[in-house]
Image (cartoon, rainbow, N blue to C red; front, side, top):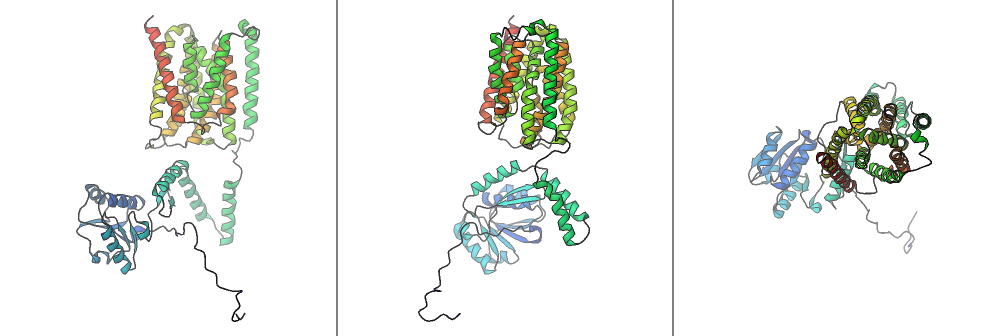
Length: 501
């Protein structure tokens, strides 16, 4: 088309400047490049640490008149890093591929930048985004998976916080997934089209609904088991214990105390994933309930509450089935053994009560310690003896009336397990462990404290649907500190009363 004089229909319009982050992300093989780092002070140390953390074999030459001891120590541990104590000269960039200026002299940094550009080299200038050709972003790494975060030089603090969030949220198992996908790709035969179809078929599972193979009827199993157990228990108690027959007709005041306590303790447990057993047991002992009866009440109430919570976590895909299988059987064995021993000593409650109070005191201190150290990074490797942990956790839980969450859940998380999947797995396995422990207690005991037991059962059941959804609504640290202080004080009071008798 010919544009005639005076025709304004195609008048040139000014182009709008693109918005947003226009940086192009790349990942460099620094072991194949020569990086020159000018500056060996605090900023230089920070840059060197970032480079070596991501590329331990990077070839780096450090130019600086003064060198921090930490820089020298770090360089000594990496053979490809060379430290030259001298003033910067243009010739220092003759063999460079990448340049980083990290001095505290702004004029020198500008001079280094000009020298780099004269040689058509890319340069990063510390704390001067406008002088940089590239930025060193915050890095999230899980094995072979590496994510780089950039805020376009606007806020390194935000990048750092995002890195912390993603590092916590992304499970370590992602690296295993990458290795498995790599093996699948290498083992595929056929042409390119066939390989793409096979990879699509395999990865389509990741996009489907979260289902657990062979666990489709878990909800039915949990509720059917609970209803059957409840029916058998009520029938047995009705025929066996005359006091239970009169319970409905004459509800004691104690029932209402434990109703409110069960509701409150279940809410707390839903918020922090632990402490229901220890708080309920501590409260029961303070109200004069013998240890075995107190533990029975806790386990009976936890059947329904953990059944509901476990099912909700299952629906949300929060259950690690391999971990569940490793915990379940040893946990049941430990719970039955602990319940049997404690029930056999019911007639010696005056002696077992201070021992259990000592145990709840220790758990209170453990919870308090975990609250104080809640934000500290975990440095331990994953715990490997899961079955032994389940056995010990089930036994101690039955003897002390609680501790499955405080011991098992906290150990798994401290050992590097993902908090969300650990919580869901521990809740679901707790349902079956509480079930078997309760059956043992009922078989062994002739309890007359059904008002307290019924209050805990109903109160915790009422709180369970709410408790599973409040974990991100309130301060976990505040609740843990408050719970631990209360448990410690009540336990000390119980021990003091025993010693002063």
